[in-house]
Image 1 (cartoon, chains in turn purple, orange, yellow, green):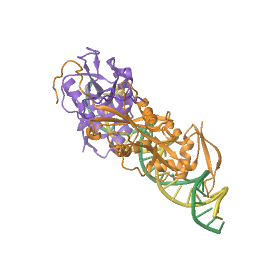
Image 2: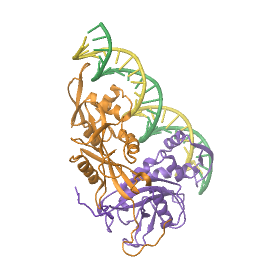
Image 3: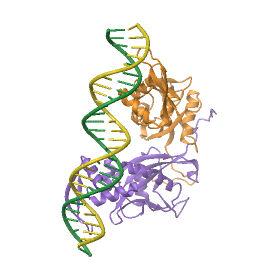
Image 4: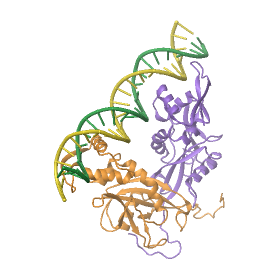
Length: 212
Length: 212
DNA sequence: ACAAAAGTGTTCGACTTACACCCATGG
DNA sequence: CCATGGGTGTAAGTCGAACACTTTTGT
């Protein structure tokens, strides 16, 4: 019950620290795949190792703000194109400094600085960040073409069919049927076919879709 | 940006406190509806007001453990029948004592002590707890008949059809079609019809379903 | 001509909704 | 007998997945 009476000043029980870790994605048109942003840690623990950009949540700070701060401080970027909450990781031993909750947030952003690694080939990361990515990946795959903020941020205002395919393949780890994907895109009210200019090497040029 | 440099000792930036609030449900066979557990607060702030059972997360404590502790300390109960994570509420002003994150957890439990209120008639609660219930209710409705741990905990090992209907109606706010609900139950592998004994007043006696 | 990429058509099964109709019980 | 709650049958609509086939390009 811990009903010990505490002296007046600062009698509050210690709570776990809270960090906010951002699973930040972008679509790489060259490699035709989704990538996650990681940074090299400059502080203990795990100095020199790669990790998801994360910060300790400040008092009174909103989660979205902390995630933006992580991207700004660790990667030098401005506001992400979209942002949202995933889940809380609460294993007590996940941080060697002491028990620290991690609120995993997704983000879509881009910019110079920072290292991008393919979702399919994530190197060993600090803390439990490999596990975070592993657990969050199906959640992100669920969001594609459903959460339009997320999807639009990934595709940009207009995108060729090839991007739609690569995006889906990259997040779900399965090759989508072109026909089915086309029809799925057609059911999204905010999406329209705007032309068919994009030629990716050999093969028939694909249509370009654009967001309303 | 609050980049004030702090003196060496205990240089860690202050983080928001973390509380864990439990949205604890049970099915009331008398009222044929789902109810939420609330307690009267004995401490500031909001002393004397009703609130969801919640505790401050201790250092190194797991979220599930904190939720169980909330039920134990505030309601005197043992372990809940099922438990899980919902979402984090991070409005800085949600707690007048200072910024406090609230990790909302769902639980299914029962016992003497504590007050049960109907999901459809939740009185004004302390903090933003009315909002928490409002936001979490659709998530709980989604879990019914899908998350089997959750559902089994709500129904108990065996239950009559009338319970299945009342449960669905109570969580989704819509009256389900009896036939469709029957077929849905039949598709759950762990569920079987075990007999048809239950008579609820007038009308044809309903079948009893039981979990494998 | 042929391979590669894109697009169209069709089907199948699972799931959801809706609704019409039959069954058993208490008053 | 009839209102009430329970159960079966059937059909429309949606959705995802699978597959056959055509179209347009580069080499």
